[in-house]
Amino acid sequence: MSQELPGFGEARMIGIFGKTGCGKSVLAAYIVAGFARNPPLGILILDPQGEFANNFPRTYINGIPFDFHGLLRLTGRRFKVYSIGDIGFKNTDVDAFCELLKKSPYILRNLELRRSQDIDVAVSYLEWYIRGFIRENHTINDITLDQLIRWIMNILPRIFARETAQRKVQQLRSLLSSSFATNQTLRQGLEDRLNQIKALFQSRVSTEEIIDDLIANRDIVIINLEQVSILARRIGITPVELKAMILDRIISALERKGRELFQRGDVANVLVVLDEAHRYVPQRMPKDNEELARLLLRIRDNVKTTRKYGIGWMFITQTTVDFDKEIYRQLHEYFFGYGLRVGADAKHVKEVVPKGAFKIYEKIPDPKKSKKYVFMHVGSSSLVNTVGGVTFIEVLSFDEFIRVNYGITYEEFKQRYSSEAIERLAEPPED
Image 1 (cartoon, rainbow, N blue to C red):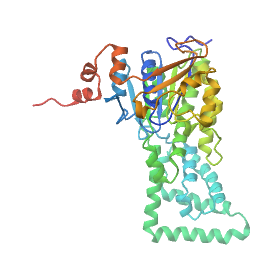
Image 2: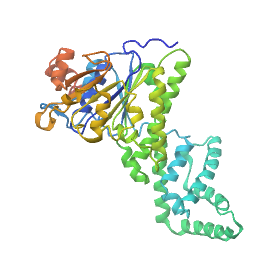
Image 3: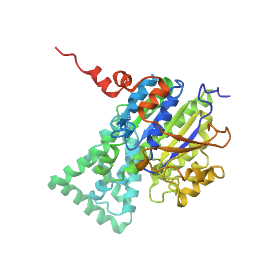
Image 4: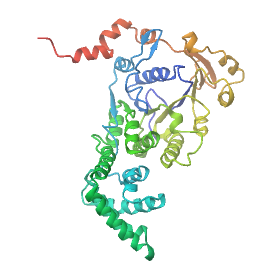
């Protein structure tokens, strides 16, 4: 039997829904700060847009700037921020490298593999060569353009296996040799693209090390995937695809660690926060995005199975319509902000709220006009009723929140915990 989770209870599944500008990210940050007051709980924030990592730039409530990082310092908890340059893929992750070659066909198409079916066959054989290369104590970063060209020259007879195609194989080999001998612009372009892909395999810390550290030290870990969008465009794939590949490996590592602890009679005791969740757990199974489909299935399975490992989830998303319904119906806590009053959004809200509550929800004021950020909360931890109760809450401004919860003034906070205060401490002393 796994031990009871101190101060947190069983892993919770939480959803925060609302249109842009309704205050859902700030509410999520306040909830995270509340959970952070429980030291045995590790918190993993998966931050596709960099909002949590960049400390909520340009976010104000009633004229007071929101300082998430300062709030975490105020809780006394240590937090770490990792970027894509810190993590990326393991330098032996052959599956990821081959997937990127396939999804970013610039290299293979310029190596005379033009049809998608030829690229698929080539990548399947390349995988065999690369795995052998890795077994010889090499890494992905040791692969050169010349090495890749040699492998493709060896693969050509297998792609064009029919006897009548052998002349084409010879033509392609001759073309490859002459192209790279005479066209330095092409060669440089291919080397640049290959190096951009390989840059994703130069991580300074492995995903497994981050997860081990998260659980062992009960840290708050923020993984900033904002810069992934730039890298994705450089190598010619969509940002969502590349982010899905990275998120899948992070969640997989956490799942493995949770299972390992559970088998030893222990628990992970981690809350995972996923921002922009509708992009990564969409309502419909993606048909043309294998990586996103794999990630959706993994998160679905995690919501069902990792609860017993002590792993909870918080999903932050703009809509109920575009969010996976299988996961939606398994949540324990729902927070609905402004903007879900019509159409399919309204239908999904009504599915989980007690009869009559939706009429009150419809009266939530538009925050753009009222400057009030109100949410309807439904769930087992409601203040009104422990079973299916409803609570309407207003998001406090930052100064109000720290005064009510920590008993200090905003001026005291700014002097001791704010980002500006930390910057002052880091400044070298004047001569």
